[in-house]
Image 1 (cartoon, helix red, strand yellow):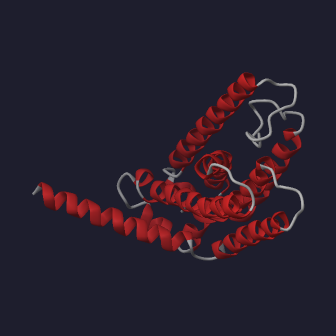
Image 2 (cartoon, rainbow, N blue to C red):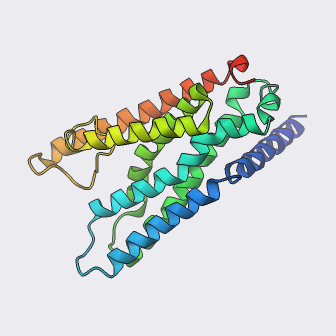
Image 3 (cartoon, rainbow, N blue to C red):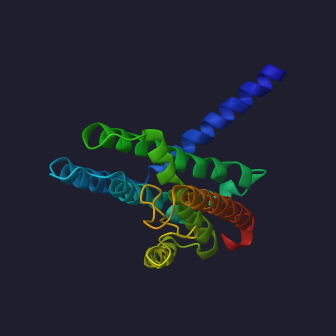
Length: 238
């Protein structure tokens, strides 16, 4: 009996993952994936043929923008795509909806992005300059996770992909403008761990980076919980 229950649960999870993968890779995601790849390849070719040896702090910016492109479309337009396809009516009929379909989907989005970023960092480590692939990828994915979860949360309030995209672009520009005044602050979303401030010692910089990553991870969790909670308000999406 227990074996059958586990088997049925495994089949359910497998079907849910396959369903969400089809949703994630549908519509315009392929264009954002292509844009991310082309952006990475274009700058990588420049770095490869450049006379100056590229630094890790330069590559961090390339990886960060590529990662943002990867998660932008599925996190911003996912809810609207469900509404347009009328699958959201079916999803609301699933018990404990917030802990199933959309939770699995959002996790898959970032797992896929992480794997693609691993490929990017591996190629750069081989072709441009040696560095720790796992460390670089993980450091890049933390702000990507923060911005992606923020996009997901806003999409559940705005319920329109284009509207959410505009709001996120405004927030992105706002964070970018603040990155210079906050270049050595724990509150800088785009804080580069490989570019320490010139007048800050290593111990202080490590503490600033630790606090920054804790803030971004905590913010990501809060955004996710807010989004999943908001998705329970059926009348807003019907």
